Length: 252
Ligand SMILES: *[C@@H]1O[C@H](CO)[C@@H](O)[C@H](O)[C@H]1NC(C)=O
Ligand SMILES: *[C@@H]1O[C@H](CO)[C@@H](O)[C@H](O)[C@H]1NC(C)=O
Ligand SMILES: *[C@@H]1O[C@H](CO)[C@@H](O)[C@H](O)[C@H]1NC(C)=O
Ligand SMILES: *[C@@H]1O[C@H](CO)[C@@H](O)[C@H](O)[C@H]1NC(C)=O
Image (cartoon, rainbow, N blue to C red):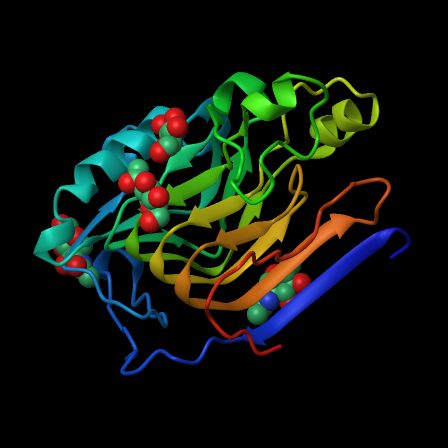
């Protein structure tokens, strides 16, 4: 176990949730898939419906974004669940939508692309005013978007049967230490300015930087996450959960 930090977050539940009820939808295709989620969805689809290929090599960035753009259209009609089946799903950054659930099968692994071009530059957080990693002028201009990013959303869920999101952070850590990064490294999951957010039942590995970063959000449930990264300084700043300024109460 040398050099390995395993952080098991069994239950971090936020309270002011009111009548959150259990969602026990069964997807026939996946013999009795049961899960706890704060919202059920009227529609569902699989990433394979959008040309996704889980071979660990094919880029699925476009498939994810196409799926989410399409499923975003039924947000007002009961929302949608996007199912990620067993496999290794290589992807760059993609954006979430409202009334949406991203569901990872237990044998599904999202593999984060190691190509910087797969992470669009977004504005630095107002609370920092600049990126944390970059140097000089560029640090003020932007930062890499998270692998999974969402802003100004309502009712968004990222959940699995302990499926995995692997940030493949080693190349980022290396570049960071050698001062080769112009912009701040991506996080694994970042949600900004959103209400009713659930992130649960996942294993998060080797993020380029922080693993989960909900900021300016309310009504957040984070539970059942296993977060694993080598110890700093091998993987600098790979904090598990770094909640910024949310007006939700987190119980450890
Ligand atoms: C998911 O979609 C499939 C195919 O359209 C459908 O047969 C199934 O009933 C749906 N399940 C849920 C939970 O909506
Ligand atoms: C996600 O949204 C942000 C801002 O809303 C945008 O800058 C970024 O390019 C989007 N990312 C993708 C992959 O489309
Ligand atoms: C998102 O919400 C914040 C805070 O309410 C607001 O300042 C910002 O303009 C919104 N952004 C978009 C793209 O709607
Ligand atoms: C999820 O998977 C991780 C890594 O394999 C393991 O350490 C953890 O115990 C699992 N959690 C649950 C609830 O099965």
